Image 1 (tube, rainbow, N blue to C red):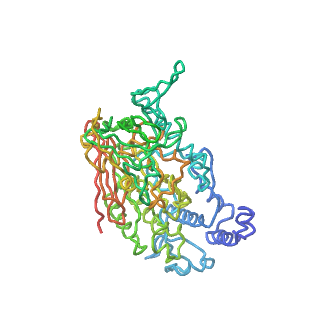
Image 2: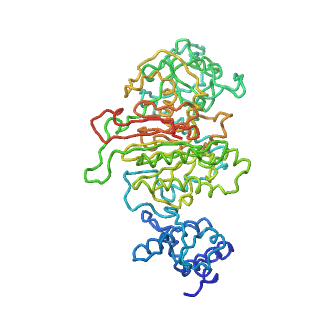
Amino acid sequence: MSAVTQEEVIRVFGDHVGSDNKLLEECTSICQLYNLSAETLLYKWEALNFRPSATRSEISEFTMDSIIALKAQIQRDIVKENAKRPQHRAIGVTNTAIVNRSRLPVNMHKTAVVGQNPTIAQMKVEEGFGVPGPSKSSSVVFKGPANDPSSRKYRSYRYMYEKILERSEALDDRIEEFSELIKEHYNVAELGDPTSGTDVCATIYRCVMLVYTVKDDIIVTGRIVYDADTADTAPPRLTETSMALEASRANGGKRVALRLDSSVTIRGAAQGAGSVGLFPGSIVALKGKNGGGNWFLVKEILSLPPLKPSPTSFRLPSIKSDSAVDPSFSIHIACGPYTPDADLSYKPWRALVKTLKASKPSVVLLMGPFIDVQHPKIKTGETDMLPDALFRSLFIEHLRTYLDSSPGSIAVLVPSIRDLISRQAVYPQGELDPELTASDPRIHLLPNPSRFSINDITFGVTSVDVVYHLKKEELSIKGAEVDPIPSASPDDTGTDVMANTCRHILQQRSFYPLFPVPLDVSHEVNLSVTHLDGLRLADGTDNPPDILILPSRLKQFSKVVQTTTMINPSFLSKGTFAKLDIAAGSTDSYKERIKTEVVKLEA
């Protein structure tokens, strides 16, 4: 076949490729190097992007980043084709491909190793890069968030474009949603306005003003906020004298200072807790009265209704016996940073990959940051690689070596707002671009935060350090327990301080219930208020996840809160990660069937 010209490439690929001289030269070079026509090259690109699961084929735009994946696909096709027919190889020459060396690019002459036959060059094939994984089906059943075009578009929203009205509506809707829950759970007909006086009332009867006292307390709902008039610290901190309640617009929409009665009680809290935690942004239900409009006297704090126990909290649903999938599985969980601040060697990550190859878990859950924008070497520009290239060479390449060594295993990646490879630096955050992993079907890209299930066990995960943020802002209010709720798990005693901090996430039904974000850690969240729906923990159901992953700078832990196992694997740069083993039994207790362990990374 005659050599392909640039004009033929432009005719087939269009003006998009023709307007990029570098891209045009690369396409022409590939055609000449592998003896392909321009049409064949286009067909290979379309085949590489075809997804059988999609309703229609969606071919992504052809760019310079696409060249790497396409070259790897062509090289693999050559190796497979050569393996099908008998060959008489020269001694010492393996995995070879016939190429025209006179047309090799200059940079390939430096790495080509010439065998005994001068027309044969020994070439390294990038195993698994840019190509589908093993033909063997996965050993687990994975179900993630909706991945249709409209869902992906919603998650990749434009930020720094919020309107004040939309922000206020999102905050107000959250109060209204919990108000309905409170009314139903505590059988309350109407909620009161915390800003209106409830002690002293007056009326006129036959030209005489009658003043009388209302003895009944009212129940109000709202959001805990700082009382700007009494806050005496900078940044402000929540105290018993600096609390205020912000009501929804349906109940006045104003703020009123809170004062706690000396004999305040706590209704419906976890048995044994003896206290309740409040923090800025928490939605609360309070019982008391307003003595005249200036402040609301709290006599009782009503705990929010708990989520319903997960269906799998007491019995793991078994997968059909005729299925080839084993209902038991193992999962390893790690959170970035994946390299210490001193260098970009990614030594902890490479050590984890070594551990993965030895233990071969069914699933590996990895949370960002992968390429940390706060890393000193990156902030000072001490690397000449682009972020995407750095991610592929230092992270994805090692991940694929594990997946190739463990057929049937999958990887789940969740980004961080500190990720330099993410298009969004805001929370909630969309998933990473599939081009970063060449759409490898073994690697699942999820938004931050997200919920997913593996073999019917539900997971919740976020890379934001919400536990630390809650811990530093929480104000503990002690009081006598009234109608406490017994724990659904013997491990949840109600006296564990860290478990009670994590309990806020379940009760508030949000991956990040604080508002506003604490000023000194606001750069770690970049909260988009108008997209608070993306932080819902229940996600359309009233069931919590079976396992909730909450990486934090605080000491690593594994605790059971209600029926949810809370895990803090800490950061891999600190040398720790988590291991979970889920058994297939249906008669064992919840604790016996889900084994969790936070372990030290072996050097």
